[in-house]
Length: 412
Ligand code: DI6
Ligand code: FE
Image (cartoon, rainbow, N blue to C red):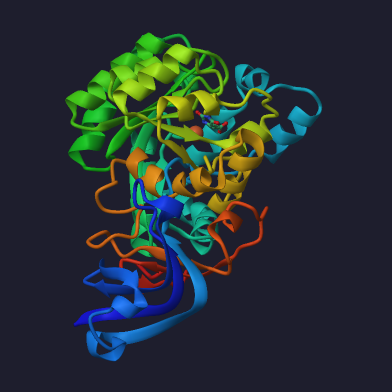
């Protein structure tokens, strides 16, 4: 007997290669032990629903999709950067603010002041907003501590969030996000600290599953990033790269050389970079929130990525400096408006391909038997409406590991 069965729904499975996103009209979903035990047309159920499961629920004719996966966020930080945004409106550029010691470094200052509890409290409302809008798996990067102690504290705060709320958190170490002021005249010393101390420690304490680097003129060079990624590999961690966001650094090629799970941003990636991603099977993670809020005018090479068969994911990039975005469905709509993804691409980008960007394609991102039972019900008629509404929240209910969610934190 299953734990539960859901009836009165139309499902899109997002199964790779399936026509029309794997549409199943008048479908049924069976859940057992936190996994999907059955999915198909209701008439093909192997018996009357009440005989198959302990609980029978109706979704009232709504649309069901896999639970959403936000595969790139920096949601744990102190303070905010509303003032930077106002400065940019007066014509001060993002890179100019960073070069003057503001930008990421001003968030670092406000983040270092917070305890683990303070960090969790600051992030919870943002995470709750993401969850209410359908996110069931959430990647969270460190990167606003930039010293061993604070980076590990950020990762512990990320882990706590996954214990307090019904969401799976995937923690990523992004200590190579900016050069901290203490190392202003010792770049190599900071890289040494990451490779010799922080990365091995984060791996040993199992606080991160991946290491990310910001390869950019205002951040780290290709050679510096390569050293960090080598240490990540040596520690058995997966690799990700913030690549070619503000200039062509050849960072997509770097990601490909290291067999990265994903290369993210990609506005300035060259045709050679796209070809390298395709050969490596690296996912392109597109971040329309950051593109929009920085006033960027050069979109990532979507047509070339599509042509080369590079899987495309979309994420919120939720962060205080360039993308204060707490809705993945909004990011999905923006990917269509700004980057001209198709409706099908925009939905796959926040489910199946986002799972792949986290190395989790085997357990989530589609509605298939044995996948984790993470799914959402939407007040939408057709899947193309999913990435059409600009704001608002059409998520009627969501299920995480087989359980219908409410979003108040449990005590810990
Ligand atoms: N790229 C981004 O858009 C964010 N980080 C990164 O590497 C911005 C982070 C910030 O400005 O606080
Ligand atoms: Fe980012």
